[in-house]
Length: 307
Ligand code: NCD
Image (cartoon, rainbow, N blue to C red; front, top):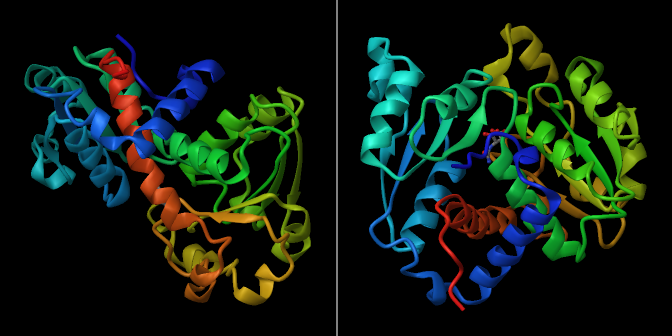
């Protein structure tokens, strides 16, 4: 039985295959409408979510399966003190696969160790968010036609942003990827990403404070929200929350084929006027999340793509 806790749980070949299935799903959705008939997905969300939970649910419904679950810790037995280990043991009796989001780092790993069904990490604290990464890879691949030889700018909260950590983890495996890490010093990438992921893989990267300086060289700009819920004090959040705001004026500094991605939700970091720019790809990205989660559910349930 396979789980998805970290993008590295899949080989590059497996990821390529998933993206290929997702691409076929986009073109021929009706072909996949019954491949998961009779299967159930449990969505266990102990933290707020719009896109991740609903795109998982839409994905399973599109495959002919059904969904059950909870969308906050308060409405589950976690509020009574139940452990993740016990919860997943029970959910294994009710569903065939589980997507879990939890505020604690490592929670999906604990669940996987006690589960009778595949567990998908739908975000564990400030650690990893591998299905957002699959979404990001599919989006980048369909916009740029490749995942190698790209200069990728990551901007905003690189410390607490789990989507950033997972995306870096995944992209370092493709040749000639360069990163420009744009953040205030307080929100720079964690040490383990810099040392064990970037340096250990000999990946070219630089850390900058200034977005304008970075923009002209980027092929992809990945904007992120300052992660309010992970701050220890509100003062720091207020001081840092608007550190970067992408505007149409700044977009003039970027290449004509530099695409802007954002895992969403957006707060202030991209002005709504940028939405009209054809290079703004974040809403398309949210749509791709459904296709790639469909492909992922099929893979973990060992359902073959129909011919
Ligand atoms: C992200 C998350 O939950 O980490 N959202 C998402 O899943 N699309 C990003 C965020 O909340 O800022």
